Amino acid sequence: MRLLPVAQAVAAAAGLAILTGPFAPAAAEDPGLPPIPAVPGLPIPSLPTDLLVPQFEGAEATPRPMTAPVVPQNPYLAPNGRSSMHNDAYSTDAYAVSGPVGHDLTLRSRSYGVRECATIAFDSRDRIVGLCGGLEGFTMMVVDPVSLDVIDELQISQRDLTSGANPLTDICGGTYFFLDPDDHAFATTTDSGIAEVEVAADGTLTRVEDWPMASYLDEGDCLVATGVDWNGRLWWFSQQGVVGTLDRATGQVKVARLPAGEGIFNSVSGDETGAMYLVTTHATYRMDAALSGQPRVTWRLPYDRGTQQKPGTLSQGSGTSPTLIGKRWIVIADNAEPRTNVVVYDRRRGISKRLHCRVPVLAAGASATENSLVAAGSSVIIENNYGYNGVQATMLGRSTTPGMARVLIQSDGCRVAWTNNDVIAPTSVPKASLGNGLVYAYTKPVRNDLIDAWYLTAIDIRTGKVAWSRLTGTGIQWNNHYASIYLGPDGTLYVATVAGLIRLADG
Image 1: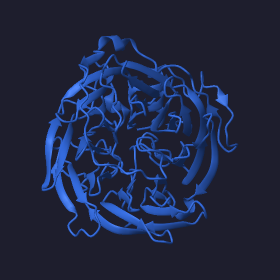
Image 2: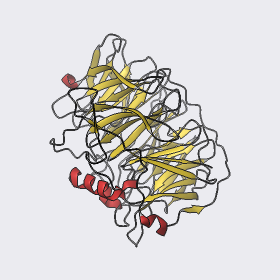
Image 3: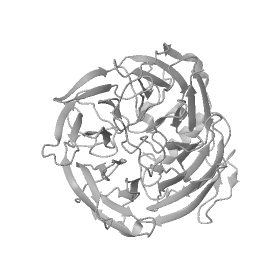
Image 4: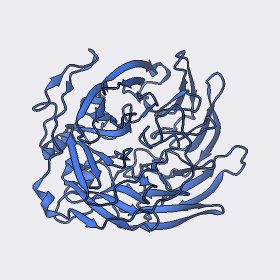
């Protein structure tokens, strides 16, 4: 699949032009980068077909808060729920705040052209800070959380469209970043560096530091993720399995190489012991740094990676970042056949038997996930992404394989609490609201009339039943293409699409 025809299709469907028309060139912050397109202040375009599909189904939910193990605050990250794609150092994808319950819902959207803000955080003034990818490359943006207007933007790195990589599936640089307590964002770049960007009090962005890491990588490798441990040490991870640490005070870099052939395609987690946890295409790891900063493997746990890369995944292996629950568990999904398993390990020190349980989930012969598991109390929720091989998989009324499931983690093992075989969420990173007991997914039902209708769907965590679904829009411009759902500090819900950002709130 070639990017440019797909991007042109997105632009045509959304009534947008690619780097022309309403995109008046603005001065680039770095003279080595091309001009940055100005951001249009218009909603994501609607289509007449919006009126031909249900606008809202279900009923307002009654909040039923849930208790959950405490997630300690990493002192070098912005407050939990604000710092990164997966919310906190444990990658729980769960919020303490109550999200929308479906009461008189209001929806607002803003188009940023063919540009998707897959990862967003919230700064100390509750503004949205997003790392947004488009044809021109990756741009950091500060966005007003109510109007969705752009306060400032700064291009971080540019794409090489001649490289042969498909930008719709290429996660090299620009996918993940984290925000620290001082409103400094740390993002990987397409030239294998780490950029530090300051968000000022007035919302303006300034690039304050760059750390190049390309010299530590083989040709063709790239940075995928970055994180920070409880000692303030910055870690980075390459797609071909190079793991590095950076002392930001001295600039000293230490690296370790994982076994040949193991790739990293997802984000990472950390806990208060100083450990960093990651999942490669072959195994789950705990890594710790020596006093010198040298990263070392503390333990390695192979999992069933199956025999092939399934449609809907970016590699032959787990599509999940590791999810930590309490002081004991680390949870992933494998790539087994005929069904994906939720796999729970005991991460405590001094444990000889780390595997706690392995539970098959979702549809036989059609199960895969490329999104992190959601921690909901002492359980996790998994979403089926099987069949999503690009935006064309959800065009002309088509969609992907349905399925969401909840797995309870118990002292003597694990069991599937429920499976919902009606919900179809092609690629969304779902999120849980512990404040009201709902989990949110971005869904697209199959339609025989060829209309592509996208919904924000709220599901009862305890029962697996859909509480309600609210239409966001019809057409390819509403596809979220692996972007995450987020809850703001006040419970407002946000989700990015290939053409902008959606805001959904109770009236």
